[in-house]
Length: 336
Image 1: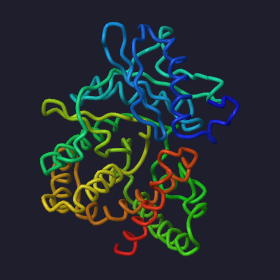
Image 2 (image 1 turned 180 degrees about the vertical axis):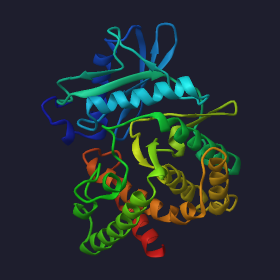
Image 3 (image 1 turned 135 degrees about the vertical axis):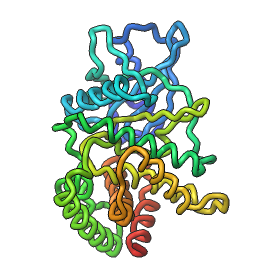
């Protein structure tokens, strides 16, 4: 390993190895003896499964540099604790360091930038991409509704991420300005710019007219973050939670259901959508106007995915998906 090479210029495997070194350093601050560290994934966050000397398992999350202010991390923790004490939802239980902190800032010479780290109990369960059906969609809708109810009493002044300006603004976007992409053709950029401007105007008008349709959201309610164990659903990865449109969490799920339904004669996007909304309506009100606007929120999410990939282009493990994301967003916009 070339230790002098900048982290962003290293290969995917080298980046993972360096993050593992940082993980080892971070775990020194926790009140358990680490027996094993297993790499799970690395996209924006790096996730490692940690087993202690008593065979208890934990999830260690390493955030990307500069992704959140410390105050924003505390707001994430505030909501998780609120969910744990006021609902029956299954979410990760945070673990404090030996000094009583939930988030710690760790530096390692191989990574070269400080990273915030967070440890929680490891939740049992499996992701269900290949067996998503109407029952799953209904349960996910109920879960999203309970999350939105729970967030009503929570303030997140440092996570004002997902209203119109943060979600799909130009210079104000949380991840990246969709009008300034680096690896698209002139024609693609023109279409994406037009799509962004159209959907921004629609969402901004809706935001002004319907502040009651905004609140604290999870912002990543897709099957990679839903675990099913013995029939019980759990949701993980609150890293992107913040103030936003309730529609956005539904749109994230619907974009995932599009993938599920493609090429699968056993599943219909329409049926999955109806089941999701039915489950959600058991917990939160949803009107015909809300349903009519969902395609525009789906388009916004597709554009956000492009912006997210652009912002993470130094990660070789996810760079390959960028052209596909561009193509999917353009085709969706042209059919909307």
